[in-house]
Image 1 (cartoon, one colour):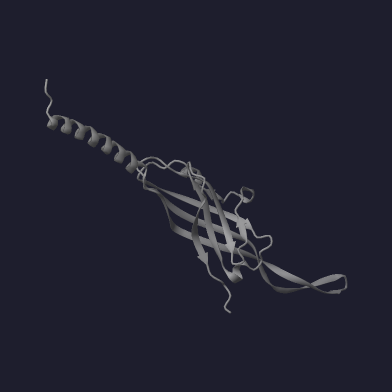
Image 2 (image 1 turned 120 degrees about the horizontal axis):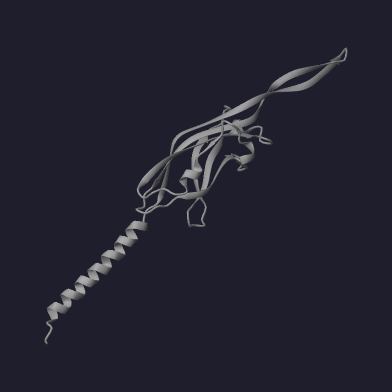
Length: 182
């Protein structure tokens, strides 16, 4: 039995093409990324009046109104999260925070949740391949120390991890400029 070299080359080429095709298909299914886009973003600072204790006359304390200071901030935004991979993937460990111009961060904790709070980040744990999900976040946070946050501006950030990865990723949701004119 004499096997020609053309037969050996064609069988080897077919096997090599099959293995190469399988390898490229496997790579293309896992290549891609998670893309985040902001649909809508709003931030509202609630203010409270500030009074200075003035004079006392006839056992009555007279207070003088001196202005307003931020008491809390309500952040409300919607995101479109797209899985550009061909296989299921998602994000976890989502954390929303505000970064003031002084680089101080104010994290939105579960402590401040109320009946108006919305957090749909749990739906991002598993996003089917080549699919997009829309999520909403709405929460109020008390501003304990940063009373001039609206004077200098701030940024709203989302911090997250892609499932199976350890590196933290950050996405800026909105920049709010100063409300003061210099």
